[in-house]
Each structure stands twice: as C-alpha cells, then as structure tokens.
Image 1 (cartoon, rainbow, N blue to C red):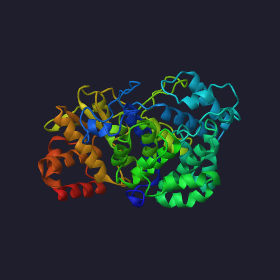
Image 2: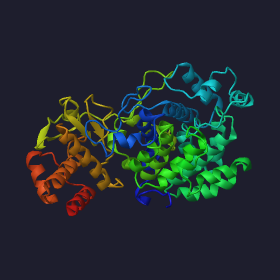
Image 3: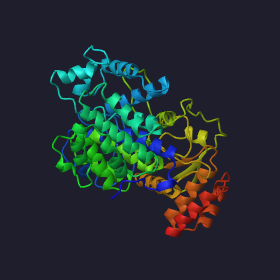
Image 4: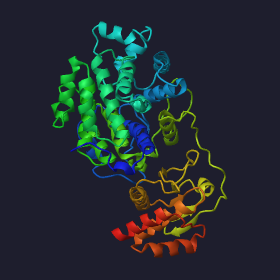
Length: 473
C-alpha cells in the first residue's frame, strides 16, 4: 500500500504542517505512559476509542507524566524550532547551546547518550564526535525524535538542502552517521507528505543519496515488506524507530490507527509514536487528528522559563517554521457574553465569553480560537473556520459529535460555542440533532433557531456538510 496523504488535495499545506508538528507532540504524549512496557499494553487498556471524560491520554508511566504531557522528545524539538525561527536558519552553535541549557535544567527525561554529549563540557563542533571516538554507541533515535521542526523549516528548500540540514543537526548530539542518515530520510519523507506526495516514492528517490556505508541497511528497513519484528535492534535505535513509523503508515488509513499500531509495539513508545505522529499528522492534516488528544497536549521546556506549551502554541510555531516567522498568537476580541442556553437535552450554546464564564463542570467544545484554555475540567478544541476553507467538514463533525455523545454518556453537560455563537455553533448544534434524533437538516435548523436566535446559516459549505450527515442517516 502506498503511503500518501489520506485526503489528497483536500488537505492544504498549512493543515499538513500543523498536523505534522502537533501530531509529533501528540504521539509523544500518547506513548509516554507506555514507555518500556510490553507489546499490546495500549490496546489491552483501551480496546476501543476512549472519547469521554477519561481518554487514552491517561498520563502515568515510569515518570508519572500528566495526561497529555509531552516528554524530552518534544522539549528538544521546540528548542530546535525556536532557534530556527529566531535565528532565521540553522545556527548550530545556538541550537547546541539551547540543548545544553535544557540539559543543565535537569529535565525529568533525557537520553543517556544525549546527556553525555551535552554535559561533556566540549564545544558543539566536537562533543558528539568525541563521544563516538570514546567507543560509545551513538545510533540511538534521540536526534530523530526532535527533528520534525527542521524538516518543516527546510522542506521548501528541496531534497538536498533538507537532507543536509538533517545530518548537521543530528551530528550535534549523535556522532554515528547512521543516525544522521535516518534523520535525512525522515526529512525527505516529511517534505513529500507536506506536499501531498507519496512516502514510498520519497524513499525510493532519497535512498541513492544516503551515504554508501549505510545505504543497504536503510534500504532493508525501508522496504515495504519490512515489519517491526524484523528489527535486529530494540526500537530505541534509529533504524527500527523510523522503520516502524513507515510500517504503521502502510497499515493504517487514519492518524489514530497509525498511533495505536506503534504504541502497541511496546519499548520506546514515546519516541516511536512521536516520529510516527509527525508523518501520520502530515498525511492527515490537523483536522485528521482526534480533538480529544490535541486538546490536552501540553508541556514545559526546562531551562526556558515558565511557559506551558499548548495546542495553540504548537500551531503557531508550525506556521512560523513554514515561512511566516512574524506570525503571532491570536487574541480574540471580546464578545457579547451570551449566557448559555440549553438547545437539546444536556447540550448548550453560548458565544466565546459566555462559554468562558460558564460553570467549570460543563464540558466545553470550542470551535474558534479562544486565546487559551478556560480552566474547565474538560475542554475540546476543534479546528473549524467560518469560511469555505475547511478541507473535510464531515470528518471534523464526526469527531466532534462522537466526543459529545461520549461526554453525555459520562453524565457531562456539553456547551458548544464559537466566537459569536452563530455560524459554527449553529452547525454543530444542528448536526447533533440530525445525528442523535434522526431528523432532517431543515428540521434541525428550525429547532435550533427556535431556542437560539443567534443562529446564522449563511455558510453554504456548512449547509452541504449538514445535508451529507442527514443523508447518511
């Protein structure tokens, strides 16, 4: 099976870029609690999708992660991404210095090899190479796990430039060229996926550019028939990590399926899921990532101040890396503060500020940019714009409605809102009635309008999506 963008040209580049960076962090957080565990532990705990109050973002593990908290994989990726944006390109000394400050801040998780190199006291040009010369192993997956921001940043420069950058960044901490070649191949695969291309075609074109001593082994790991059980090393090494990610893409059609496959492999689950999440996220786009996962992903970067990175911060960095370094966080203007109104049993409507001030026990479904979390126990963020640019409206609606149903089954009241509480809010409320009560789109519109006079039906693409839902039955 070819590894291509799931929805072809319907997923535009910015959606894929955000899908790659957010998907990487989501995979990291999803796999963290299962790190060093046995195979199939994920499916044993979650045999089906967990969409209610408690989801697969369960936290815990050997380092007692918070639900949705990312690990050193994403922490280092964010340091790399910030350096690329702030320096306007690759400044190896700056990247190494950021990594070193992070290591000195005693992060809860750091690879043995990465720690040894960053705390060696040697300059950036020689630290990793000296580690190898001393006889230490250096082909771990620690440089692969963090390279997604660089793959996004250099994608527009073409195959040679992105593969060269990958090798140089890898060599800052991983002196074995095998690790650098793995990063170079990853960069090229992601570059193709971001353009809506085929990953297997990217591999075929890039393998001749791999350094000759490493080409044969990488060709074996990248072969379509390769399986994780064929690996000759544990999946903490670079070869099975990347091989497993491609294997998962070949045997899945959605982001969720790909991540379930790799977390069930056991072992170094956070890193294998992190790498897979980047590729599967680029394939699916941001709207193909489950909102129950993206809404809770978060973490701090030791040594870089008190900032807690959330979904909106990851999305912003993705846009900056993709060529808009001046992009800034959006702060929504105040709204009228429409008080919540119950539109269907247990399902409420409001505008942005009305939702922000609502009871903390209510589960909030946010359909617009909010300027950050509200402080509710449960808040889900759906990627939905009030125009005709949504690539897969029905896919987004399916995800939102399934989560709403699970939250209601858990006894939660659910509040739906967008900025003005009009068009996007009205779409989801009407879709809820269509799905739950089996009524027509016209009947749903009349029902919602009767109790929520702020409903707006101007968006023709929303109407078409609603009609499609109704036709499904």
